[in-house]
Every structure is written in C-alpha cells, then in structure tokens.
Image (cartoon, rainbow, N blue to C red; front, side):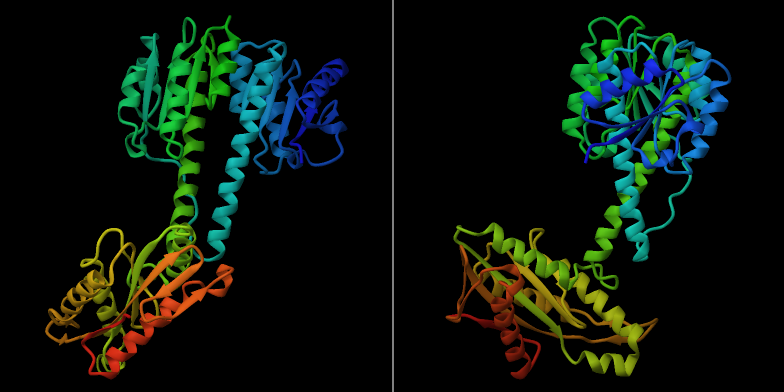
Amino acid sequence: MPKSVLVLDAIATHRIRLAALLESAHYSVVTASGVTDFQGNPGDYDLVLFGLPDDRPGAVVAKLGAGLQGSGTPILCLDARGSPLRRLLVLRAGARDVLPSKSPDDLMLARIRGLIRERETEKECERRRMTAASFGFSEAVQAFERQSRIVCTGSSAALPERLSAVLPHQVVVAEAGEILKNDAPRAAPDAIVVWVDGDGSAIDMLLPELRDRMPLGQPPVMVIYPPDRPDLATRALMQGAKEVAVQTAGFEEFELRIRNMLVRKHLRDVLRLADEQSYRLAATDPLTGLYNRRYAETYLADFLARSAGKAAEFCLVMVDVDHFKRVNDRYGHSVGDRVLAEIAHRLQDNVRACDLVARYGGEEFLIVLPDTHVSDAMSMAERLLKAVSASPVRSGDTATVTVTASIGVASAQVDGQIVAHRNGTSGRFESFTKGPFLPILEAADAALYRAKNTGRNRVEVNAA
C-alpha cells in the first residue's frame, strides 16, 4: 500500500502541482485548502504537507498539530517567504521541517521520504514497546535528561563555541576521519553536526561509512549547507542525514534542530533497549539467568537447520540435582531457589563460551556442546559433576546445603535430515514442528535416568 500524504494549501495551483509531484513518486494524495475544509482526521495520513499562510504561521501550525491528536504524524511546511524568523517560529510550534515553496522537487521528495521513514521506525518501536508492556517486560519511557556528546566537523570555527553556550551538552570538534576511527556503537557520539562547504565531499565520505559501520547505533547527523547549494541538502538526506539546515538560518534554529534530533534519538534508543530487554526476558529463566527451555529447543532446531548437508557432531548433557525435593522440604523453597541459582553459576563457569546452558525444567539443566566428540563431552560432564558438589551451598549465615547431581550424555551425528545417535537409533524429520531434536533429547534423558537409578552423583552416556 502506498504511503499517504495530506496536502493542505490555500492556493489551488500549489495543490495541483504538489499532488502531481507526489503521485508521480507513487504516494497516495488527498488535497484540501485548509484544515477547516478537510473532512477527516489528519492523523490518519503518513505525512501532512502544509503550505504556510502569510499571517501567524506559528499559531496555525500549533493548531494543526493539536488536530493531529497525538498521532505523531510529521508536518512538513512549505513557506513562500522563507525568512529565518518564520522558520524558527514554525519549528517551535511543532513542524518537523520547513522548506521554501520553490525548493527543488528532488529535495522535497527526499525530505518527505526521510520523515515518513523516521516516523515508521518510531511507530514500530512503539508497537514493540506496547507488546512488551502487555507482558510486563517494559517500563515507561523516561524524559530526556542525560548529557549528550555532540561532535562538530567542517569549516565553521564559530559553530562549536556558539552551540556550547546554549546547549547543556558536551560539544567537541573532530575531523571526519577521527569520527570513524572508533566505530564501536558505545563509543559513537550522540549526534554529529557537519558544516558543508565546497563540493560536499564530507557528506559522501562520512554518512555512508556511519551507516555501514554502526547500523544500530548510528548517531543522527545534521548537515548545514550553503544557501546556494540545495543539492547538497538532497545528497545529505539521501545518504541518511536526519536534519538539514541552511547556513543562513542562525544559531537558534541550529540549537532547536539539534535538541529535537537528540530527543528523537533518545526515545528510539530507549525503545530499542526495551525491545532487547523483552527478548532477553522471554528467552531466559528469571531465577538462574540461564536460557529457558523454549530458547534451548529453538536453538537446537536452528542448529540442525544450519547443519543441513554438513557432517557435524554434537552432544547434549542433561544435569539433574539429586534429591532436590528433600532440599525444598527441609530448608524451604527460598533456599531451594538459592541452590538452583548457585548450581547454574557453577555449570556456566565450567563450559566453553560456545556451549549453551539452559534451565530445562524445575531442577534439570540442559547443555548443548556443538562440534564435540562424545569422549570430550564425557570429560566435561565429569568436570561438571565435581563442580556441582565441590562445596556446600550456603542457605543462611551458618547453615549449608550439600548437593550432588546426576548427568546423562548423548552424542549425535548430523548429516542433512538425519540425526543418528551413537546408541544406534536414528530419526528423520520433515519439519521442525515434529521436533527434530527429540531423539537426542530422549537419548540424553535416558542416560540421565540410568545415572539416577544406578546410585546418583555419576555420569552415564548413551554411546554405541
């Protein structure tokens, strides 16, 4: 479905020209002479393109923003006068940007694409936050307060000093090459301001590199371009710049644009982190911090899918705490929880970084050992057995709980759609819904119960 744009302009020829331009770019367009003549909700559109009136432009934009009813639909204004003061008033009233009415078509379309894309990103983050909140995974987004680091690059010597005087943030100067030296997302600045002169080579060097090196943590960029080079603004927007401003705009407008850019970045970062937190909470066990059963089984199915057509060997280790019901009955469930958390730490501390440890059931743990021969898995299982019982678990200031575990090991060969176990059984699978990992899980489980039935505190293996 094409994106929809509502064009509001009192001059009919302007509406006709804008509608033709947008429709040629495959937008769905509705036109009206003004908000009062439009029947519907402006918030139902992906963007509002608004031709500013001659009088009281700030008040009119504020009224239009109120009519959007908190939908977040961006307002892009076109102004025939184009004075810096009018532009500043309109931006303060809530418009996302203001362009001269006679802006080149490619600049106008680039700005529209960027604003709609940014709004779509914000809506997707918000949808994920609301979904997470419904599961109790997410907290409300907090107001933007923390100090940010802004990097200025380009030929304007006055810009950093003036921004430092009006912004409550750290403003530093750096060459474009210096910004790219440390491209780790955590080391990236919170925003970059590029003052462009000449051929605009800094745009073509800096913006694509930032996009490629830091796809998730890319800092927003504002490009300040010469008044006679609107083509540089178009290039900057097409390369991913979040804001563009003409050099004659004035420092108050620069300050406002940077503040708004940082607020939007902060909200996106918070929502992205909340999304990541929701994923972690959905995939991990809250008591032990290990992956949960759902994640472990998804991991196994994915491992088998990625191993299709390749000869690979892996092992599963099942660990069950011996007589755990007695611990709960004697010391209480809070002590039992402490025992499980401590055993989880001991298991995690005695496996490789590439191994997966999950809490599979109440007192049962599953360990996946990729590319591991059964003899190596047995050695690791013996080490885990000793680690579990190496020292008692403290249940209070003085009391301690001695624990042991029983361990079962199973090994499998993966080759295409065949999972062949060392005990001679095999299983062919056609879809993951039938559980391609079930045969080896059953083999490890059988070894575990053999360990429990032959005395506990021991390792058994299902091998040919």
